[in-house]
Every structure is written in structure tokens, then in C-alpha cells.
Image (cartoon, rainbow, N blue to C red):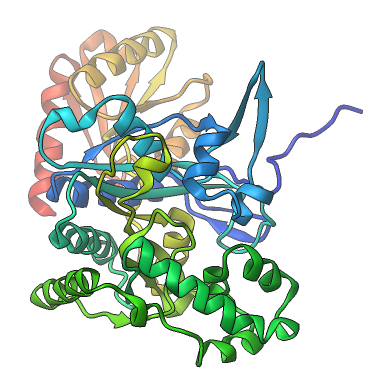
Length: 438
């Protein structure tokens, strides 16, 4: 018996129509195109250019960019070896974008580089609702300025995507991470504080206490979250310059009418992050409420080999999380764009003529459907209905000899005779009439 193949667990197929995968709803390809178009429209308004990086990179690049001690690097990477080089399927896209910026000397283009991306990422984690082994990210990186306006523009851009898609029930959380010496002092204070509660911590948090105590602040364990109330706050260790920068970010957000909540436990566990950090959440998504997040990472470039710091700020968001929010908000998707006309042929000569004429109509800019199975007229008309064609052009051998065809309105059922010599003009007139009614 031959094997029946299926998609790998933790992945899904995007089909022309909505489907389900492991009990999860997956939007159809037209819906994905609709969302991606909304993202691109927003990026165009902010004059952000697209960048596309390979889906696999050297393991060392990702380990440096994501962090050697993170779960992503230690447990969740799809890694492979080729010759003497180790590779990994990218688990995120910020490090590859910075690698491309440095490799191709994009700073020499002049000005600030504003780059966005949309593409797949990979993590070998346990699949669950909204989390897959292959998932999709979109995001933006603004590289080459440490101005607080860049931070706020990135936040505004992120929010604009969700606003365009009518996702309104969100909360923006912000914090400042200060500079490297500030975070080092805070980290030591955290380690001292949590050390006295070591026996009360989970095994995961005990490991984090020894490697990176900042990550304990991300705990979802209720018993551990009670410990956070009295834990040292990063804001109390922040240097004066970072504090002034944070005040400027908040002032600019207020100018734009963007509401936010200060969360002094919102941190990033990697040393190259500086100053602004933010996350966008949706209360409609339950415990896994994060929609997007980002911040400033001025020291990443040096981590990836640059001789000098390169100021940068950006955000990243999961497409699958976005679709869950769209579903929770009841946002309708537009129907897939249908065809303009369906060609129905009866007889060998008519079949050949409609095939050739369909190509000409497509060259003229029309979306055309036709039968490719040699079916009966009744079956062809059913297919015209299935493809939601507003009109069908019916041609038989006899009509073709007379230079005429039958035009059927698939909505009203009305039928009339038309000349085949100016078919493009006829369809163009019908489309114009439809557009004026709409």
C-alpha cells in the first residue's frame, strides 16, 4: 500500500479557500493577500522599503542575534550542516536584516534606512494555537538614527497596520531599558533578590537566575508573578540620559494621541537592547495575548561584527496571531476577485476559437474562465456559476459561422446576441456599467 503524505505537524497549507489544520482555522490565500496588501500599504505611507533575506543563515549569526542562552537557540532551532558550515532556518528576521545592512553597506545609500519584511520563520517548538513550527512574520527596522522620533514612528507604524485592519481592542505597553551599565546593575539586584526565593522558583526560572535573571520577569507562573511585586525595577537604575529619552518618547506618543501603559517589568533579555521597549497586546487572545513587540537595539550591529554601534529600532509581529485577532474581532475578509467572463463552447471549431479568444481577452486585461475538460454546455454553465462569473459568452459552431455569440447575464438570466468581432469592447462596456452601479 502506498503512503499518503500530509503536511508536517506544526505547519499548514494555505489553500485558495479557508480550511482547518489540526483543528485550527486557516484563512484562504485571498485573505492572506488582503492582509499582506494592508501591511504594504501602511509601509508605503511611511516610505519604508521592502527587504527580503534568505530563509536560512549561518547558525552563529542567529545565535548572536537571538542570544546563546535563549530557548530559541538552545531548543527551538531547525539546524543542519553542510560541509564545514552550520546553518539554521531563521527563527526571526531582525538579525538577518542587520546582517544584510552591514554586508551591503546600506548606510552608504544616505539617510536613515527604513526596511520592512514579510516572510516565513521556523521554530522547533510544541505546536499550539497561534504558534507553529513554520510561522510568518512581518516587521520593520529603522536603522541609522538614535532620535526618539524614530522609536515613536515605528510604534505608530505598527499600530497603523492593526488600525487599517480594524483591530481596535489593543493595549500598548512601553518601558525603557536604559544603557548597558544600568541594566548590569539591575541584573545584579535581581539576582540578589531572587536568590533568596530560589527554592520557590520553577526549574526554568532557577536556570534563568543563573544565566539571565531578567527573563524571570517574563514568567507566566502565578506564584512567581507575586514575587515580582517587590522585585527591583529597572526604572530605578536608569541613567539620566535614558530617562530623558524615555520622557521624550512618551511626550511624542502623547502628541500623536497614542495611549500606552508603562510597564517597568517589560524587558528584553539580550544585552544589545537599549532604551525603548514596547509590546502590543490584544485581550481577545487570552493568555497568549501578544500581537507584536519591538524596541531599540543599538548594540546588535557590534554583536554581529560591526566595529561601531549602529543605532536601530524596530518591531516584529506574527501573521498567525494577527489572523486570530481578526477572527476575534469579527473582521470580514473581502471575497477573492472573480473573473469577468466565462467562455462556453459547443463544437470543435467553437472550442478552438474560445481557447484562442480567451488568450486575446487576457492580453486586453480581462479575467477569463473557460472549460478545459470538454464538458457539456450544462456542465460549463455550472462551472461559470462556481467561478462567480457575472457573464457567460456562449459560442457554437453555427453561431461562430455567422459571426455572433450569445451573451448571458448570470445574475438576471437575460440573454442577448452579440458580435464576436468586437468582444473586448462589449466586455469593457459591461464592466464599466457594473462599476457605475457599484
